[in-house]
Length: 251
Image (cartoon, rainbow, N blue to C red; front, side):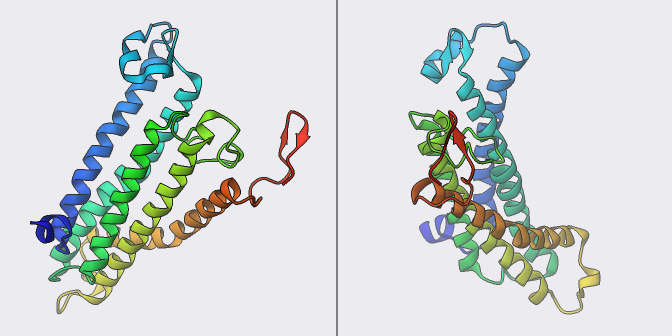
């Protein structure tokens, strides 16, 4: 059971793993979206009925402003990365590429399996950040400094932000492993007689998506790594010329 359904190297099983995890994130992302849209749509309404679930994040019947920022941040992160990129692309690329080009499986089943499990570990870390006492990351889903670089900026810049960065670093590793696999499979494992010009448009879309990912994600990985260094190891890649209450940071 474990080798067939958990640590599987079969592209169809891995596609289902991506799909199930993506569905979980879609439900969670939609729930977070509903919470802050309730506050937007009915600003005068009391949300005390959410107190048993959200606890201190509901104050006087309204969502705490810091928590509102965190909801927007986590919703954007979840929908863009964990649902659209990993959930949809991971599912359909894995499932359809071998079937539509006449290959037995992906170029590397082991790398394919690693791609999913890096995504899964990334998901666990991102999910755990929702339960941090100071709240999850709250710097907007684009994670602009200095809110993302200064741990003391707002409550959502604390441990939740660090977990966000670690999670995204692992997520990017997952997507790079997947992208290399998709590109290699499409270029090398097409069935006899199927030239690149005869590829289905679906495969072309997966191929170009993987190429764009390989170009974009290493840069994002570098930025996440530099932010982790700024937050934890005293560097100042993003922290030069920052003033707090009129005082310049030593960076």
